[in-house]
Length: 263
Image (cartoon, rainbow, N blue to C red; front, side, top):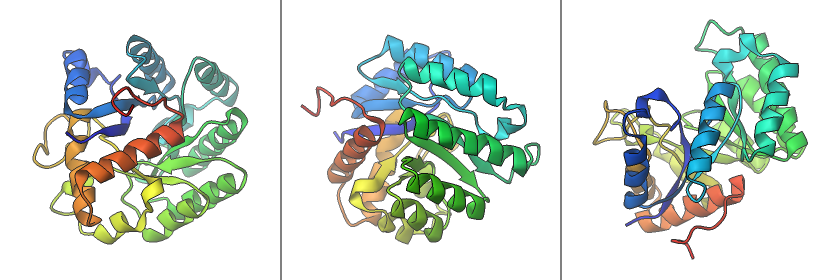
C-alpha cells in the first residue's frame, strides 16, 4: 500500500453529504495519511474547519476566495474572516488565483482579490493554494513577486506551461498534479519530470477530475493512488517512492504533523 497525502480535496462539498465518513475511511484504507480539505469560499472553509475538527489526526483545512467569486470579494470582511480561520487552524490561504475562462469575474476584480490574499498569506506566514487557468502572464508576475517577498505556495491541479512552472519553482513554490495526468489526452510527461523531487505534490481535487480508471465518476481522495502511480511511471520511479515524496512535501508545505503510519 502506497502512502500519500491528498494535498487538495473539496470534502466539504455537498457531493459527499451522503457518504463522507465512508469516503474518509476509504482514503485511510488506501494509504492516505492526511487530506487537505480546501475552503474555496468562506462558507466552504467553515464547513472544512468543522470536518477537520472531527478528524484532527487526518484532515486539515484552508480558507480563501476563489477567483470565480472575486466580484463579491470585500477586503475588510473577507480578509478578517480568513484571519479568524487561520487563527483557528487553517493551514493555507486559498484556493485563490486567476481564471480568464470564467467571464463573470472581471480580470481586475480577480487580480485585486488574488493580490490581497497573497499579501495576507505573507502576513499570516501561511502558504497559498493557487488556481490558474489561461492567465499565465498575470499569474507568473504575481507569484514571482510574492515569492520574492517570502510567500510560499503551490500551483494546484497544474496543467500549464513549463515556463510558469519554472517561474514558480524558481521562487521556491510547489507544483501539484491531479487525475488529469491519467487521461488519454494528457501528453506532457516532460512537465511531470520537470518538477524536482522536493517540490512535487499530488491531489484529487475531488469531487472533480476522477482519474482513469474512474473517469466520469465522482472523485475521492482514495483514488490519488492512480495519480501517484502515473507520476511514478512518467518520472521513471515507483509508486512507493513518489508517494513518500508527495507525503513529505505536503507535510513540509502545510506544516502537517507526521502521521503514525510515517512513524
